[in-house]
Amino acid sequence: MTAKQDMITRDLAGKIRHGIYPPKSFLPSENELAGLYGASRNTVRKSLEDLTSLGLIQKIKGKGSIVLDFSRLSFPISRITTFNELNQSLGLKAETKVLEIKEVKEVPEDFSCENTEPFIKVKRLRIIDDEPDVLDVDYISTKYVKEISPSVAEHSLYDYFENDLGLKISYAVKDVSVQTVSEDLAQMLDLDPDRKAVLVKSMVYLEDTSLFQLTASYHNPNRFRFIDFARRSKI
Amino acid sequence: MTAKQDMITRDLAGKIRHGIYPPKSFLPSENELAGLYGASRNTVRKSLEDLTSLGLIQKIKGKGSIVLDFSRLSFPISRITTFNELNQSLGLKAETKVLEIKEVKEVPEDFSCENTEPFIKVKRLRIIDDEPDVLDVDYISTKYVKEISPSVAEHSLYDYFENDLGLKISYAVKDVSVQTVSEDLAQMLDLDPDRKAVLVKSMVYLEDTSLFQLTASYHNPNRFRFIDFARRSKI
DNA sequence: GAGTGGTCTAGACCACGTG
DNA sequence: ACGTGGTCTAGACCACTCA
Image (cartoon, rainbow over all chains, first blue to last red; front, top):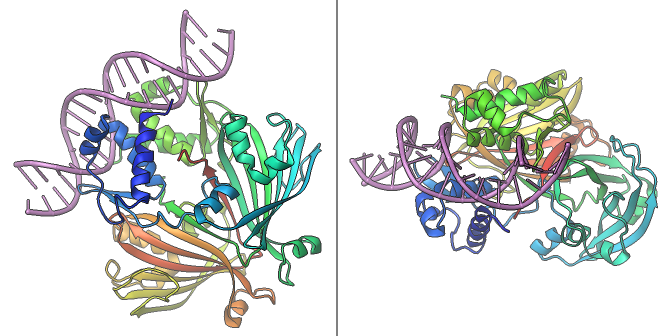
């Protein structure tokens, strides 16, 4: 059962992305939208809030909801977005080479977190436009995932987790830094002689706050880029 | 006039940060909170939503709102947070050296955005624990800010904008990448011979969607780090 | 003054987790 | 069966923008 507010959000987001509500135009007023969708004003407002935090619109008191111009950018690290979702939205030629899948007892210490269950380690090289771009090292808790096949690893882990296993990924903490990496890794990513890579460490949690996945992503700094939409916090 | 929901949000956030509601404990239920604060359940829910998107709590259906363990981390790039706010919260010895303040007609082209008004250019070197850390180059629209004194630039631009000028900073788009910079800049930031710096370009907008500020921040990659809290988007 | 979004209320029904 | 959060409604009053 999809909530009415999510239907409205998706419908409006689609109309914004397809230019039916073009940048700098105003959406219908909250009362009009309530009428259009047969919903209460509160429900419409909830949708508009979601669009606001996605960076699709900006609400202006006394005037209305104006469509922003960032629908093309995307490329966010500050939502949980996967390699495949990214490439789909950017239309790049992407390839995944699975290097390793094996069960491990523990996770490297530099993920500062308690971990008791065994994990499945998945090591994958991401290749974009024939250039090595990212090395992903994932650790997935065996509490929730019993096995990962090479074809799943090559296709999309998240698709498998969310659609096949019904897991609800909820939130993540990401730690971004620049590191000098080993010669092996430098060669794999075709790095400059300085061997510097952008390291994104992620800890991913489910709805019930249980730790589900740890990832270390090593990006080639010459190709690394992300664009982020941020709002000034009230607090 | 502060809204009741913001009072509740701030009160709960404070109690979480001060350990009155410690990590892994549950907040009182929504109905209890409504009673405690003399507010309707909807108002309380709005507060809990804000705490959720700040990464302070996680709501679990049928159980309650559990306090997460990230209140210490902070250091987000994906909210709009200023140098001074950061250092205050981290308790570092910080210093700002103002290198240049002057009015310019235009902004460097690589900020891909229309700009007609003249801007005030402010160039500042940020020094943390006696090590040069960041070079900030700001361009502030003269439409909203007529003058910037050296003491304001040394202290806090945002404090001046928000508290003295009453400007409402609303949202920003940030573009993060790794760049090889000029020798001058490399020397200023004490970079390695590879001259790589992390460049964060920001475009900052006001509530009425007008472009207010552009910033290029060059970070020493050896000290650059940010931690980000992200939620999986429904859309 | 009419219309817009911002805040708040009181109530309803549902799905979920626990005992 | 009960309490929890999730969704939704219908109404109210306010502050703001603009003609």
